[in-house]
Image (tube, rainbow, N blue to C red; front, side):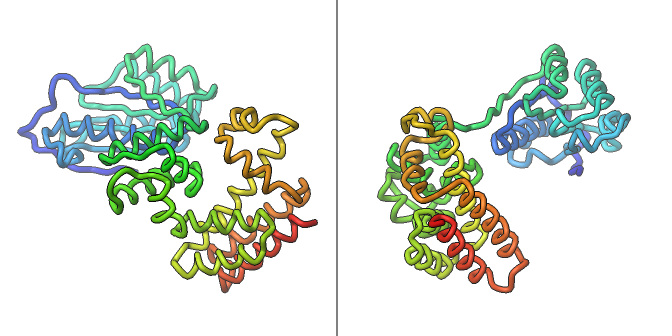
Length: 340
């Protein structure tokens, strides 16, 4: 995919610009933000128009695995209109050996007016490319996976700070419990809270604003179902659907809850909540809640429940006539799996 725009010929880029950037890590949201920042910074420097950084810059956005040998040289050839040529190569670890070699050679001898932004998972595949780009003087941006509770709290704190807001620890813990651990979901929740609330964001604000909405109501349905409380689970489900919660968010919450039970069940082995939490990168309260919910569950029951949720997820995405019926059915099956 390429996005093209033309810069006025009367303007010239500054003498210094970040021509080579390598973004390393598995956290997709952070990597995507780093790519956007690199492109926007380069284009703004080239055009002198920070409010419209894409104007006047050719941007080619490709996946390394889709590149054939020789295509990279075509992407980095001079533009017909002149000006900056930005090439984004995503997932360089997926590149063929020939393409990885071409990337290393390009980094070592960057053409004029070309800016290269490369992402890499940080794994062992094509790891030599990281060394080659470092040798070439690439600016490196690390985006490691955010797995531990403390790291997620730091992420939330930074998100609220970006929005000019402040949240206390109780509010951030409540938000993690309500929304889950996916960074995109958490970033969206922070944006919503920053726009729609006032003052310090604490647990009371989360309870008032977020519970019963979107993902939060999905998690309340999941909690009741995993506890084996059929009546309350169905009541929560009907309320959630009534206030507009998307069915797919409910199946997502059910799947996430079951995964947590499976992880805690497989890891516990007489360990303390703190030890299991440290090993899994979860807060201790989440491990404690999972252990309480695990009463009555067997490995076979968890496996059957996982299969039922996978089927329900496909149904609510279009395979079923009634998403509401599919959700009621899967909740009944989950409770049945928990009690047998």
